[in-house]
Length: 78
Image (cartoon, rainbow, N blue to C red; front, side, top):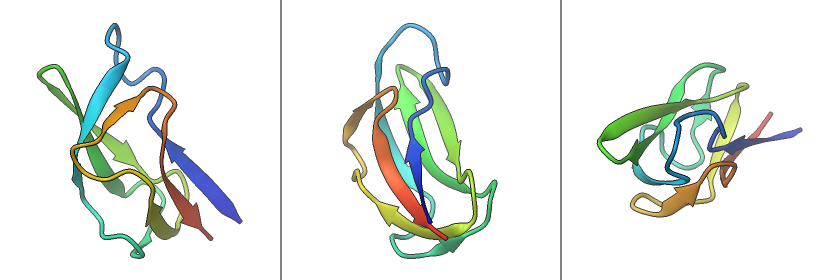
């Protein structure tokens, strides 16, 4: 089963775009539910993205890419 990781629509107010500043896990790595997998910067605030389920991470967006709320940034394969 594949689960999508998207930039949460309620992660920040105002600005609609942010930048992926870091992937905390390598592409293809196994992660557990709740593990921090990425960091997104909006203006001067850094937000962390957690894995919603356990599985193998497949990164869809690279570091330094601009992403909008709701953008698919990775998937997890259970």
